[in-house]
Image (cartoon, rainbow, N blue to C red; front, top):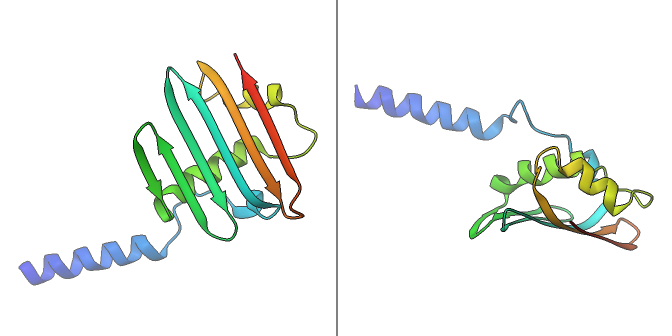
Length: 125
């Protein structure tokens, strides 16, 4: 009986590791990015998302840090919401994020595109 349970658990873990989650966000938002750093503060809690091309992902909430695959979905979801581009203003980015973070106090976005051009947006309530 123990062998059957162990085999079933192994199959489930293997399947989960090789299949992509159904709610995963596409990587198209990252194709135009060399590096992204987003920091926001809401209710005195600091949130941070980081991406460095090709596969460095980091996500922090307060003192909790996730890296690699654990952080990848969080980073991709945020970048999908932001849709980074040169013409968007800090106020527009703040408005987009207020859907998820209604008590947003501060936002800082640092982006280096694929041509190594750097952009910074700062917003404070």
